[in-house]
Image 1 (tube, rainbow, N blue to C red):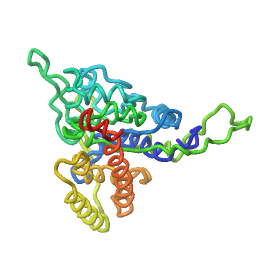
Image 2: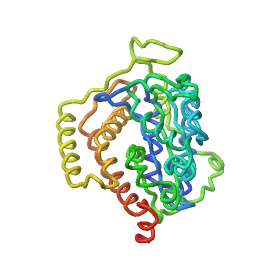
Image 3: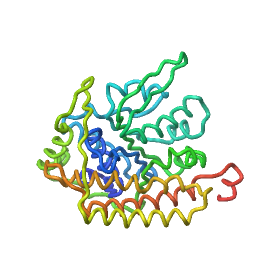
Length: 335
């Protein structure tokens, strides 16, 4: 991703890579009862380089011949979120400018918006259980599916994040399910390429990486049953002894962090899900370095996930405190 970026943004490249891996491994692997689906939001000013990681994420799925896993680039209603889930339970939805989506979902100006908020929150939490779908006006249930794996890769500006997000969005839990990544405004542009042999082309995925992603995308757990063409069995990833110790250590850190938060603090819903997010990223880390074999989660995987958690925690907390307001009076006061 960085090799193909006009403005290389390592944080956005990482978030896009995590989203790709979460999609490729969805409905196949679990770790400590947690599935790998994630919601990502990249925050940065216009022209900072948010679009290339999203474009390269799409290209990765095309190169691996798994572009069937690419989903929607916008949501028009709750139906667009759920009605095709039974046939396409695994997907990556890439939302290029999420300001409108966030405003529609979070500000509750329409019945569809409030429903989408609720559906997205439930989908994130239903990745290792059954999602019961939505109820139509006549009482009919539609969109029910076992272990949906919907992943979001969104981007917006700080202003778009502020205008589209409310304190209630954190209170109700949806924004507490996101991982937050911030772009570097001072990043230098990549030098121009005048090599005639490569000019006009993009550096491809290394063959080893390409083969491993294809293996993950086409992996079927042993003894899997096909129900409606969808694999219903899963492969459990286990931690080694050092990883177990590290997980206990990190969990105690998160528990102590929670104690320092007032129950009304805007960011508490994010803190409440930090350990679950850490489990997801630990599993993604283990699967990404495995040489087309079922890995174990090591202490290095947990350490990597913990560093990502520390990063996204501080970024998200700063964004929430700076850009999310409790009404017009609070907004004017902070300005």
